[in-house]
Image 1: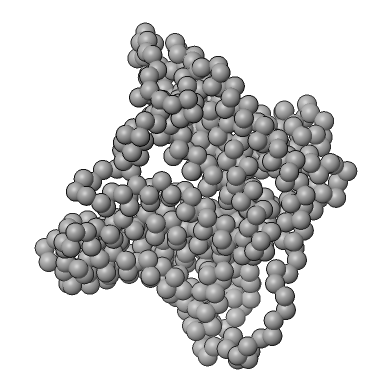
Image 2: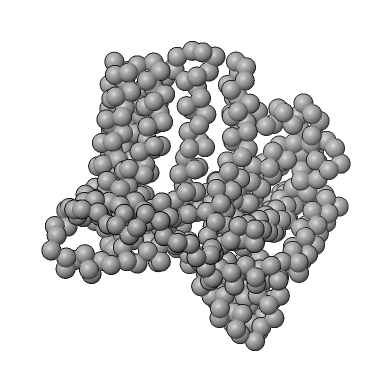
Length: 481
C-alpha cells in the first residue's frame, strides 16, 4: 500500500520521503511469519470486538458531559506520556542510528524537506502504533451510528504531532548541550522516566494514607476534585474526541502549527547535531592506570569483562533496566510502609523470579547473539561451553542488582523466604539465559538496533513457562516457610 502510494508521488518530495520513513518504521517493527500471523489474528478478533460493540451501541444516544470529558483528559495524559517516550526513542534512532542522513543531505534536496519528513515519520510511527489499539474499536462504533467519535482520530493526530516535536526537541537539546554520546544515554533515561512519570507520581501518592488504588483512579480523582474536565482548556480533548468542530480545529490546528514551527526552527539544530554525531564527543584525554588493566588472566575473566563492558555501554539496555526499576519501586516501598512488615511475601517471590527470568533472557540474548567476531571465536582453541558460560555470567551479573530488590524486601519479614527467593531468582535467570546462549545466532552488534529477539515465539514461550513454574515453586515454598 505504501509502495503503491510512493510510486504516484514525485521522488524526493515531502510526501514521498514521509512514506519512505513510515515504510522503514514498519520494516523495523517486522516480525517473523508466525508472529505476523498471530498479530493478524489478534487484530481480526479485536476488530470483531469493535463491530460487536458498535452493533450493541447502534441505537444508543448519549450526550457528552464534564465527567466524560474528564475521562478523555485522563486518557489523553496517559497516552501523551507514552507517545513522548516513543518519540524520544524514535528521534534518537533517526539522529544517531538510521544511517541514511548522509545520503539524504548530500542529495539535491532541501534540508527543510528532509527534516520535515523525519518529523512526519516520527509522528506517523507514533500514530500508527497507537492507532492499532484505537481504530479497531473506534472505527466500527463510529461507522455503525456514532460518527462524532471520529473526532478521537483528530485528537490522536494532534497528540502525535506534539509528541514528535517534543521528542525531537529534547533529543537535539541534549545533543547540543551534552554531546552525542551523553545525549544517547541521558535520552534513554529521560524516555524511561517520561513513560513511567504518571505511574510513578500516582504510586508515590498511593503510599500516603490507607487507601490503595490504581494510578489511573488516583489521577482521575485528583483532577476531578480540582475541577478539571469542565474548564474551557481542560475540556478541549474531551470535546474534540466527541466531535465538537471548534475543539477539533483548535487542537489539530495548534498541533499542525507547532509542527510547522518546529520543522522550521530545528532545521539548523538538526544538521549541527547530526554532524556532531560523527565527531569525537570529547577531547583527547591521557590514559590513566596503564594498559594492563584492560587485560585479564584466563578465558573466563577476559570474556566476562568484555561482555559486561559492552552491555554497560548499550544505552538501550539502560532504558529497559530503568523502566523495570521504576515499576518495581512501589512494590519495594510496601515493605517499609507505616513501619509494618512486608505482606504477600509469596507473591513478591513469584514476581522476583519471573521478572529476573525475563531480564536475564534479554541480556543473555544480546551478549551471545550480538557478537562482532563470531568467526574468530569459532576457530579459537577454546570450548564453546566456556564462552557461553562467561557470557551468561555477564548477563546475570548485570541483572543481579535488580534481581536482589525483592529478596531484600522479603527479608524484612522472613530471612529463609528471602534466601529461597534469591535462589530461585538466580535459577530462573540461569535456566532461561542458558537457552538463549545455547541457541544464539551471532551477528554484528551494529545490526541489533531493533532489539528484536531471535528464536521465534516458541522459545520465548518456553522461557516464560520455565520462569513461571520456578516462580510458582518459589512462592509456595516462601508461603510455607
